[in-house]
Image (cartoon, rainbow, N blue to C red):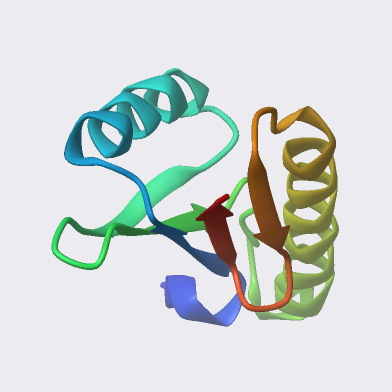
Length: 102
């Protein structure tokens, strides 16, 4: 069995300046997309969430790098679409994974 950390991609996203109600709404709004990613971790105290992208799974060890690259591309496409779709008075720092409410 191949460990998931060898081919999966992860992305931490932190919401700054959001209320508890907005944080809960964000989590609920993201949960229907379970086919795109899974929640690997949620930190309610810091208002952070970890997305795990493991859509492509290797059948054997020779496919690990291919699946890792595909999952990375999948993660980048998601972040790009999320960045374009985000609305409101917010600042989204993609590299640091921070959304700040202005």
